[in-house]
Amino acid sequence: MRAFVLGVVATTLAVLPAWGQELTPIKLAEGVYGITGPRGAINTGVVVGDRGVFVYSCQLAEYDQRLAAIRSVARGKPIRFVANGHYAWDDTGCNHMLAEQGAVVLGNPEFARLLRPYWAGRVEDDRKSGRVKKEYLEGKRVEMALPSVLFDQKLTLDLGSHVVELIVVGKAHTPDNTVAWLPREKVLFTNDVLFAELHPVADERSDLANWQRILKTLASWGPASVVPGHGRFVPGNGAKPLLELDRYWETLRQKVRAMKDGGKSLDEIKKGMVAEFTEFSTWGKGGRFEPAEAIQSGAELIYRELSKP
Picture (tube, one colour):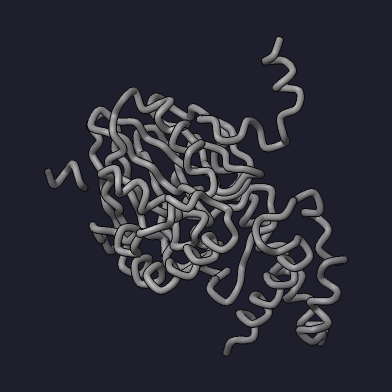
């Protein structure tokens, strides 16, 4: 038990969005799938093992479609475990729904600490906006979404045919980032540690220097396929998107350093950086920030990191 815990088609394809076929499982290895979210957010990981199904990250707004996609590859097996990359609502919104079906929610203590005060406010936002079905929210409690099994650094799930390692990588996008790694298949689910071909969201919760170290470490594992939290992915994409995001941050870091060393103030750097930072102009919006806002927010964080004694 411990190890267990531990013609029409052509027309359709012609009008598919740039992200590919959204909310449809993409096979990454035998029994291992990624589900592309609308406009590349949030992407869901699914592992179908002999002993049940593991789900990583799930947005509530499309719960019915995501659940249908999971069941389409689950071969009748129950969802036994759910884990999250971090505490944000687009990642954790389905926790309580999957827990009602018998899934065990897994997470680290920092994740649980951040999710508890945050959850009720996001439920209320969705209730007022009408973005999700009322029955998804009525009578639900935060305890249903919180992890019932906590782990500090790493938890290994033995699904029989598959092994999933949940690894706390530390502070990057937020302080509680956890990835899911399948060492046999070399498939990596990153959640918001990775924005692929999208301007990443970084704010006062983030640690960009550590984020870069994490990206390099994950790339060194030699993944065959990587599923980002936001953005495109294809089977066999390897470590390239991890290294590209590291290059994004390093390029921004170098430009901020040069402008700072040249005597420019933070306001001057932020105002000038959008025009200066052109190498990634084809990247799209990765979250709540527009590209220009994302660049300026990242530049401010780097400026403050460089200003530390």
